[in-house]
Image 1 (tube, rainbow, N blue to C red):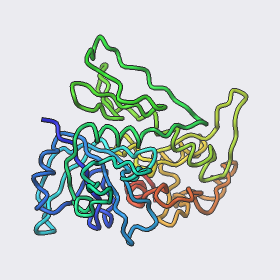
Image 2 (image 1 turned 30 degrees about the vertical axis):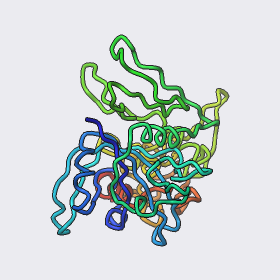
Image 3 (image 1 turned 45 degrees about the vertical axis):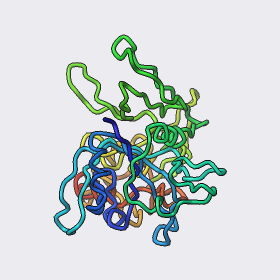
Length: 313
């Protein structure tokens, strides 16, 4: 049986920041969380003073792989998460009087605070699909992408859940096909979400975040491109917080570990590089240019991974 759920982010996850791979919850919510194993869940951010800089609402989706004990916190469990995908926009639980979750609305039309406060809550499939559709409905006018419809001779039961821009999500025999799937040819490899480059380039106004350059050729193609901070080949997600726009030469240098980024967004250069070796290179700004909204800036955990596993130091 497919059971979809809402996972409310909490202080334990915020301090760690890796909700794309793990979710810590109280053991009293085990039954609800356990029903979600193998299925898709939606992350909900509550409206709390500790997160005043971030908008409350549904903001991402992911799949639950398994549940393990949380060794460092008695009374808590750990859900292992895969296929994390940010929504294109944060969806409020109540938009214009419409409640995406019926259980959150009392008979008199007011908010059901008790239900909203539950850390993990299961929800009917139609409600899950409406939230996903609302979250993935933001199209990029600057860089529209179209995902071709899958071959129906291979997936005859496939139906389109929604086709807004490139973020289309398909349903096959009752289960969502993730934004990043595995395509089988001669080998199996992770597929990159086509929504990722459009979203990242829009956030950075098609401008290199390290040099500030914004150049377009006569065919309308930007010289800058979307780069992953935590490389996809090493398990990095297609989250906008794991992306920055970089000019092509700077992108290559960043992937090669010649540059990295500190937590305060200072640009770091490999110690072995001398000034004379960098003659003719694109001039770097002192700090990375980042989006104005804090929840869209590169996440410290992704920056740390790059410094520790890619950067030459």
